[in-house]
Image (tube, rainbow, N blue to C red):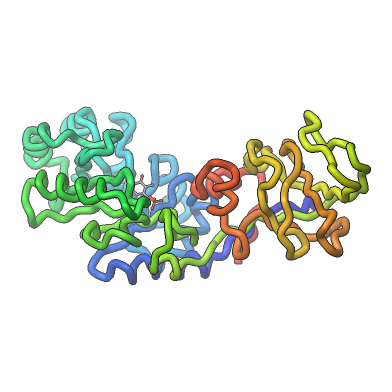
Length: 359
Ligand SMILES: *Cc1c(COP(=O)(O)O)cnc(C)c1O
């Protein structure tokens, strides 16, 4: 019997979430963002599932893009942060990777490269997030360099990224959109602004291309209720099982640091899932999970390979009882709120040690 801990990945749900992103923005092309191993779901499997639907993919670095090429994915792949070194410009040109340009040094790297053929370039403008992107006041000079370079393929695209698109009541998104259009070199250029939150909640941000990430995996990026949430189905569920069960008396403590003490005679279940699997160690007593189909809560500290659960009031728990940490009946977002993080981090972290079972 193998360790029961695993990730289940529902590929039909991934496809249906992708189609929802397209349906919310019918005038746009929708790129599927599968960086960080498809947010923990397995980039190659997700790319293969989406290959018949998505016209392009986006990743964070060239190693991720090359992994997809080696797996036979031939669609264009955007490097969301562009090249990290001069050499990567050449590799990008050879492999039909699209290059984001977000800092002046990358302009020079592209212009000065010896390329067999021109490379496609997306120019990011810093419209207020102040993390990546060319400063608006430098755009005319830098755009001229790119436009005059034989290394740059025709059809250069302008892009930006939002700082607060998940916040439904924050008008900073509107300010960024205005800043973007005010600085577009010409109004007929193709452009891309929207991440998942903007696809779902800011239709005025939809562009030639939208960049759908988190929503593809079936959780909402939005900070509140919204009609566009209804089209999302969770793709990942995180599973394990009870591996040990014990009765403890009032006053007995559980686990490292004796961080939880029984206030009554209690039944404690030990489950094979820990921070070695990417389940966060700072998940504290009270973090919800589902055991034997019923909601229960974590008690004590998360160990490397195990957690403990108070099952005193849960019927029918035995060694082998199934445990779900998040999935269809308990969202990664809800669990994340208890832990002081976001669903993005939870799903992205658990992909390493755990076997993945694809539906
Ligand atoms: C990760 C990323 C996205 C996708 O963001 P989500 O919130 O996951 O949809 C879009 N654009 C850029 C530049 C990114 O880095």
